Length: 98
Image 1 (cartoon, rainbow, N blue to C red):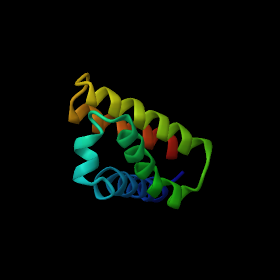
Image 2 (image 1 turned 90 degrees about the horizontal axis):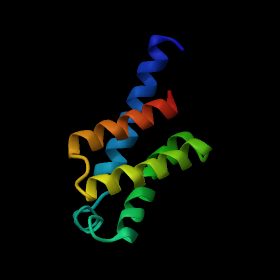
Image 3 (image 1 turned 90 degrees about the vertical axis):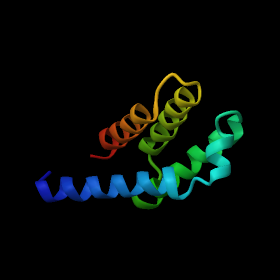
């Protein structure tokens, strides 16, 4: 994979992450997912939507979903902070899609 392809992949991953984790997450979901597992799962499904639209449905998407649930649960339980949360999300997405 050349430099252009890697850069192109990184841009797609960053775009998918930003749309899924911020644009598609309402304030209601952001606040509610801390105490409501259903809302956390809704957020994780919405997070995966841009990845699905860009990359299609693969086992990678299922892994991304599961890892997002785990990472967000850790954040909701105050086991990790927002910086570690975001670092983990990016690391997982990059490992899966590059």
